[in-house]
Image (cartoon, rainbow, N blue to C red; front, side):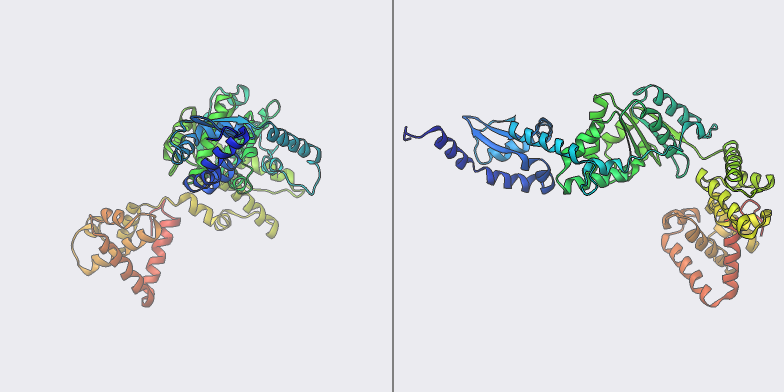
Length: 473
């Protein structure tokens, strides 16, 4: 080699030998465009030494993220061009860091201007804690007492239960509890309250706008993270990966995490096992369907609130209050909805509905709460309607007076339950699913030209859906 080569010439020679642009292209191809644009594009080549290369990145956070997740793959790509390289070292580019610091200062200077949108602001607009959802107006009974007490404990002693995982059906009060926790903790802590759906939206948006650094820094710098409806993460692998590392980072720094979902951790579908394991590692509590005691409290409280709200007295009788408390059992939200309907009826017609009118006004809500339709119930009512025994219906006999009721019961089971064809077949003496399909098609065809069949089906359907307590035709 010519000894007149300067150091600069030598570095250029090595850079050309290694061809960093080609390596970047390989990283983009092998690791994906999203990872490349968010992280790897920020890497700059500095120098090649005997057995390693020196690279720069703009921040320590990016360096740590790349080395913990992508370093092995990057080294493998580099070695495919030059086997002598056995390691990669990073240093922080002070110039880039200063530029970032200047940009942050610029954001602080102009953040109040309405014509500029910032990623932080976009999170804050979904971080509004409702001041009306507090612990003092959360009604309790045995069905939700444990979740309530755990929420109080977390509000008094951060990280006592970490994470706290609250699950229950729709409209049971999970969001109310998360909101109440947020209200208490935000007095002395930095609190982030966001739905899993919104977290996903911001995650995708940050990837597209190449703002992942701010996304990560914002969510990982909070003292308390409350995420509602975590089941929305199902099947979203990239989001789950990010959430997993955010989750661990927050636990490591002693931050409190509170989650809500519509089911227990082990029942979450298409969620990574390691994430479900983390969820189960804290305290898992459920909110059960409201019992009579709680339903009664809610009806009475809501009635009082409405009387205070409207100048005219809304007189919902004790009989109707008791009826709603007894019959609307699905969720708290539906109980409140039932009261609102009664009030609307009263204001439109200038009268309080009687019990019969209440049943009409609340017909679909009663259907939801009472609609515990089972195959056994359908079989029982159909047998009673056609005056045959259940043993006869389920037998293999093909007499006409048995075949039609059997086909009717199968048809009603198909349209009134979510059971699969094989499940229905098993409940009808292990009949083949092709028999089930034939029965359904037969009844559908008969309904086209047989008014009596239509009438019978409607009678049975109404009986099953609305009067199954009585079991009377």
